[in-house]
Image: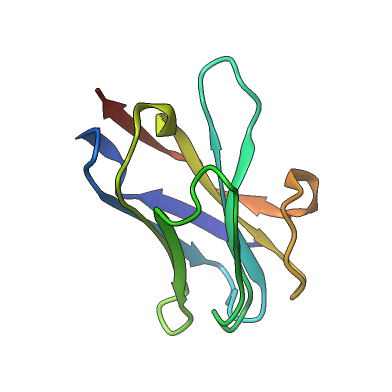
Length: 124
């Protein structure tokens, strides 16, 4: 079993920045791909970014490309999401997930464990 805990969410003005963290416990996730998804009110959970086990490969949704950066620290068993130039449409609950495979995927159903989420609110 893997437990994931997100942190770092909050209220920020448009154009501002936040850094989300997702700490894993229970077992190491160093060999697995991890990802960030988000869910806005009334909408389905959508893919944001994913990173392979080494941190050498990343993939982003078009809506966040160039503004968000995913990274990981395998010593700390933690994945991060640096979010810059935030927009009101980025407002959502952000979830991290771990996929017990090395291959990257944007599919929600391919992730095995999820955190409880952290709220990000961007005011205009």
